[in-house]
Length: 418
Image 1 (tube, rainbow, N blue to C red):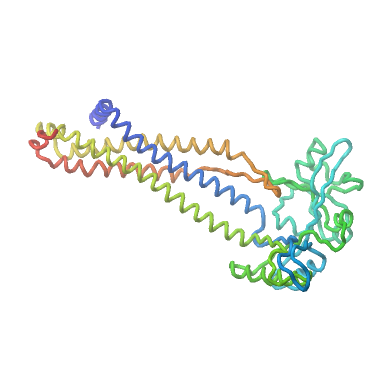
Image 2: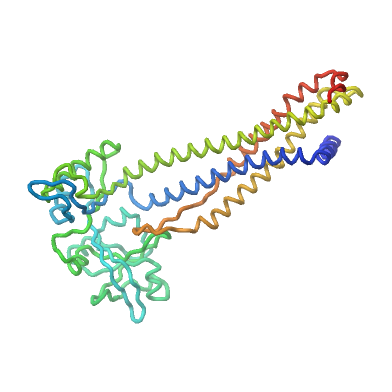
């Protein structure tokens, strides 16, 4: 075996260009496959991370603008979510809707002594942390007693609390801070999402009573639901729900612009479908890239064997067995594809790590929240190894077929070859 390796090394040094081209075809195919799959996985993981920020079986209702005239009223009327809409949601859909809440937003300055932060304050119901998947670090969230008694309570993110205290966030619990001209008691600290645009939270009734200019305006409605397992079921529910809200405002029953329904379930279904298409496309492109590398290796191995036909004739003339010639070509093919496949795999992994270190930390501001474009743009080591093995097997087969032909050729015919 040592003699075989020595001979392969000698042959490689004599044919540097041929070996380099073979190695490049192998390394490039594996490198591009890993980079393409890594980049695709980075995009997919980022989308999954954003969608996981919300409970999929939930909806948020926003006011909109009418697009159709109705009962003598012109189109273009601004529609706000009002108290009777909240009542309709709570009372007329109890077979589907579970927990109903509302959101009312205002901007304010929260201060403690000389320290202050400017942030958005959301008045919410107790179901909000379930819908927006808020993770409490200490203390508690808003409860129904806060809602009923209009308690001026406040829940801050860990980063907001640290800005106000310059110490451990938990030390702020139980203390009063100023929100404009009002004193609010801090009752909880939640973990700020690294991509989120953090809000302070308080009881809906307190924020609404202090900052609500119109007592009938609710802000937004949010609720959880069950039993809507298909896209058709969701569309049917949304149509019925929108028609009942439209009736509260004398809006055409078929007007779909009067209210905006953010259905996280259908959004999740559409995203899964889109991500499935992306995954399939990535694998198709990646496999074609790998195939181009296999074709390159095959062509070079065919040329290699043809060029060495004369050499094989001499070997057979001095007593070499067909198996020894066959083994020499197979081992050479395996070594070249393995070494350069490993190099391509390492370069692909390095490229993915570079994407993770650069693009993986860049965010865009959507207005509602900040989103990371790339999250963990890598592929599993199993994929890397499998791709390398495919290239090794392909290179071996590419060399095996002409090698078998060369091993069977008669020495006199091989010696005549040019």
